[in-house]
Amino acid sequence: MIYSRIAGTGSYLPTRVMSNAEFEKRLDTSDAWIRERTGIASRHIADEKQTSSDLALEASKRALEAAGLAAKEIDLIIVATSTPDFVFPSTACLLQAKLGVAGSAAFDVQAVCSGFVYAIATADSFIKNNMAKKALVVGAEVFSRILDWNDRGTCVLFGDGAGAVVLVAGDKPGIHASILHADGSQAGMLSVPGNVNRGAICGSPFLQMDGQGVFKFAVRVLDESAREVAAAAGLTLADVDWLIPHQANVRILDAVARRLKLPAHKLVVTVDHHGNTSAASVPLALDEYVRAGRILPGHRILMQGVGGGFTWGSSLVTL
Ligand code: ACO
Image 1 (tube, rainbow, N blue to C red):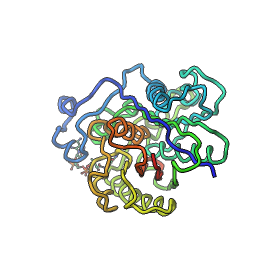
Image 2 (image 1 turned 90 degrees about the vertical axis):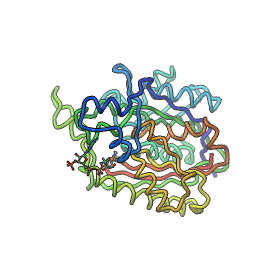
Image 3 (image 1 turned 135 degrees about the vertical axis):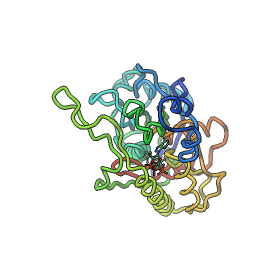
Image 4 (image 1 turned 60 degrees about the vertical axis):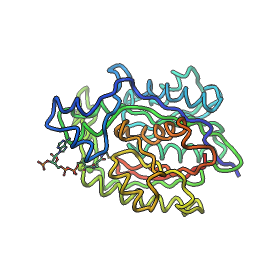
């Protein structure tokens, strides 16, 4: 049996840090309101010229270095993003070129804040089916480009960044199991309902959200998919060392950990200083905790996504 395992992690955050105080100056909001309702204190915002593939490149270089691999050894690149550089070609193809290589398969996955879990599950399937041996899986976003900066209900929630992992084939897991779900009937709850049409934007280019609807939906499906993936892996939630849910909001994270009866010290929280970085949030959080020496080889990690679509899923991994 072929399995895949994480051989290295990396991440990158744009240098500009934006605190809640900056919103106070422009909008009818406060640091206290944002912290109390979301747990977010600051987020990183990309430079005008930085694209998702630029952020992905830095995260990928760090993941490759951690894995001790060169870019030319990678035979599959998957980038999870909802803020691609272009309509096409894919951000994965642009990343491949920036890494200075050619020939591997490269494509994007669009599952919004579940994108990284969808991408990990896809790369794992490629490796298990002997269609790839070494995969670079990236979540990269510049959500600052799709926010209405005058809408206090959404613009305070998000940040930019990228995280990456290198997956390699091995004879034991690694990735024990992944499960993915979607419910397209909930598309209107969180969306950027616009497109490019004959040279103009048709619809809206800005993120729109039913905040309370998202909150309730996210807590329910993160709870359900954690139990589902543990059962699929033949493990229990007590076997989990670290829970890394999509970093949307501290109150969502706390509610999920409580429902799963996981103690607070097993819950990974980075949304306080990253904001919600959509597809980048899980690999960013993973890399931060790995580099801090908190998540260690042998630890079991439950990674979870939930986001627009609606989409959701979980992946249970031994590092
Ligand atoms: N500052 C001050 N007041 C605000 C702000 C703000 N930044 N944003 C909204 N308000 C106001 C509203 O206008 C409203 O005012 P009103 O009563 O005069 O109409 C009031 O606060 C209450 O608004 P609610 O939407 O009911 O506030 P709620 O307690 O639900 O908090 C929040 C809003 C933080 C968005 C919450 O619903 C939430 O966290 N939802 C989850 C959304 C999320 O995480 N989205 C991320 C993307 S989805 C994903 O990643 C899965």
